[in-house]
Length: 300
Image (cartoon, rainbow, N blue to C red; front, side, top):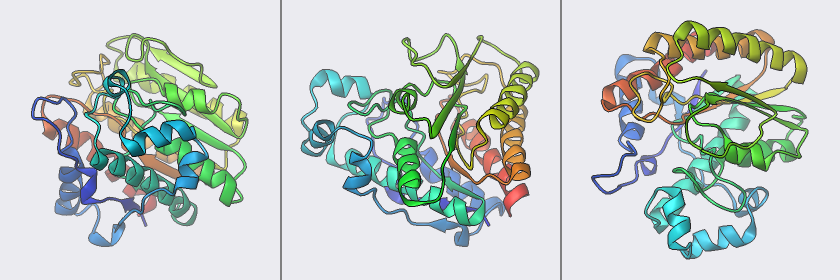
């Protein structure tokens, strides 16, 4: 059975002119329930990440500045969000949701967080709508508190997981794989264990061919006993920040490739939502809902 971390607190109020579509965090669970992909039994209320879990990844002075709301104007501008207590609490809750997700995936094979994928957060700073790195926090908690020895992070958001790559650059137990737009944010890319840069406008066929090859070869090389999947839908051609050329069918096929690979190899998978910035919120919800529909086929 799929388990899904969700809280009303995921929907954080932002200025009307802000380009981040917060409403998707409320609309997506409504859509999944309405169409019958999931029921209320699939959802669980996440608990905030503990301070010890956060400090296992993030620097103490950065965490203190977040708690005291003492980031500089430049640091706040880099995150893209107006800083507030509510925003920090939201990020801590999302990180806790991904931690719970990981441990539930060990029991159920697959678990989701209707949020997360905050892969631009570094150990000492936030960037690109990310304050705390939820997958890094959850991966570290898994290594500390479970029998998991080798983790693979499959980051298919259109933007490189720069913060995640930097956090784990010297951690052999966590292998970072990022397939992203080569001409997109961030301008300065970190070095993941495996980076697959993509040209602008890449088609479904070419994207899926690359993913099929690199995902399978990475599994053979790494032999992970756990996978984190960052399932951003900003790979769509309609995405205003994406620059790639995928259709909804191509994005769905991407998800099917990941879930089928994990299912066949019996590797537990924890999924974080990632980005999605199409002008029409309906297109964002449909693409994210497809990820759950595909997973339900394998893990229902």
